[in-house]
Structure formats: structure tokens, C-alpha cells
Length: 395
Image 1 (cartoon, rainbow, N blue to C red):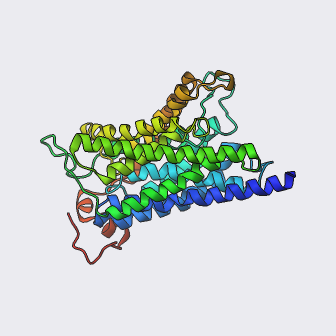
Image 2 (spheres, rainbow, N blue to C red; image 1 turned 90 degrees about the vertical axis):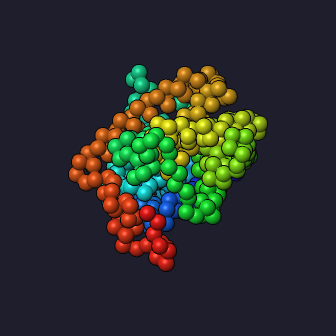
Image 3 (cartoon, rainbow, N blue to C red; image 1 turned 120 degrees about the vertical axis):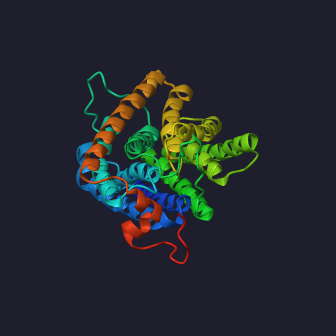
């Protein structure tokens, strides 16, 4: 194959993967819109739209250069490489925004999206996938993270944890008697649609991260990566459903879907490194972790409407460590300690920097709505447009 044909194939592959990843934009939007109450649906959709617009533009203009040093690629069009990397950035912030739904204001979250996409996330990418400004220091990272179990999913999860600690829980979520008030999803079909759009997007997310498809070896690597990605999602859904049936005698579709997403997050660090059987274990554990983590966060009174901490933070950590367990290869620089070090360094930076930025933003403009606005619904006060105007709003 000539270099020119290889260049064309890899450019097309990156553009196709980009399109698949962008399916995750409506994926997050639909999942969150279905989880929240009808009085907050328009606000959730607006936040997702603002994140996609501002985060993408911020990363293109500022963040990409911090992450990778300069535009350009020898193996494909530099514009395709930019688009592919740009597709990732919004997902970090989507993870965070979904977990603070129903009490977060649009404008402050948009400011955070700009700062995250321009500076915080690109710094983490620089340490792991990019120029590596930590090279030669005691903090030098050797973590293997193909598509971002830690770089993307845990980063978004740590930012979410910081936001929840600052903003607190939704009104009435945790009554004074110590119980947990269940706030049911408003539209289960939308939740299901959103989850499956995310699942489809994951094939571009992980498969595209292989970087090339223009040879037999690379084509096999892409196919194995996508196969293992799907397998982990299947295992996560099955195990989550089985555990729900054993523990509660009920099959909760939202938990089963989150179990699938947990398996997908867990496999994201190393889907190209495993046999076709290991993802069953990794994804299955990911689904189990979601089932156990969701009630644990509620016991800690950490209010996360979509279960993003359980899916993305917990399984981002698990998936990164799983590489060190199932694919340890010291000759290639892959060790459990190296994976653990990456989790800790990225986690500390992501949490501390996000907490500081959110705290500063909160000093100038409140991150969350007032109690009365929250009870009335954010759609009326934030957007002036209700998603379901013919319905009586539920307080």
C-alpha cells in the first residue's frame, strides 16, 4: 500500500470515528433528559448544547496546542486528528454536568466548560497522550490508557465530585430522618435511547483511538478493540441486571443500562490489549461496581441523579487498574504500579483544580439555583421554555 493511500484511509477512519463519538452528544442529552423531572428537561438539553459548542471551540483554539504542542500529523490529515481529539473534550464535562442536574445554572457551568476544555483537560492529555511536560520528573506517567478510562472518564468524575461537594444535594433528596427520597426518572424511553447512543459512540471512542486502520495488523487491532468494547458493555448489563434481581427482586432498566455503561468505561483503558474473554470479567465487574456504588454514594449523601460517579469515576479507576492486572507487560512499560500512579496523579490534579475553579466561579455567580427556583423548575427560570408545557409541573 502506498503512503498516500494509507494517509487517505487513516484520515477517513479518524473522520468516521469522530462522527461516531459525536453520537454521544445526543446520547448524554437524551439520557439526562429522561432521568430528570419534566420541569428541568429544557435546561439539561441547553447545558448539553452549550458544552458541545463552547468546549469544542475552546479546545480547538487553545486546548489542542497545550495537549499536543502543535497541529499536524504524518499519518493522516492534521484536521482529522484535531477533529477526533476535539470530539473527546465535551464528554469530560458532560459527565460532570449530568451529575449536578436539577440544581445547576447554565452560565456558570458554561464558564467551567470553557476553563476545563482550554486548560484543565488539555494539561491531563499532555501528561498522558501528548507532549508530556512531566517527562524527566518524579511525576512522569507511564500509564496505559488507550481511550481514556482515567484521562476522560475519571477526570469528569473527579470534577463532578468537586461540584457536588460545593453545590450540595437537590432539595428534599435527603430528608432529616436519614432516609433517601427516590426521585424517579421522567422518561424511561429517552434514558434507554441515550444509553444506546452512548454505546454506539463508544465504538468510535475506543476503535478510533487505535489510530490507524491502513494495514492488516491495524485493521485487526481496531476490530478486536471494538469487539472487546461491546463485550464489556454486554457483560456489565447482564451482571448489573442479575445483581438487581438477587438484591431487590426487580429489574431496574436504569441500573441495567448504567451497568452496561460502567462496563464500557472499564474496558476503555485497554480494549486492544485483551483476549476476547477478559472483557467479560472486566465489564462484569464494572457492572457490579455500579450496583454497589450507587447506594453507597446515597449513604454518603452525595446526590448524583444520573449515577455518573458510579459509572465514570469508579469504573474509570477500575478500568485503568485492570490493565495492570490483566495486561501487565513490564517490557512495554505497563505495570500495575504505573497504572496506579497515573490514577492518583490525574485524580489529584483533576479534583483539586476543578474544585478551585468551581469555587472561584461560585464566588462571582452562584453555581446552583435558589431553593424557590429549584422547586418551580429550572426550565422556567433558566430558559423560559418548558419541554412539556401541556403537563402540570411536578414540584
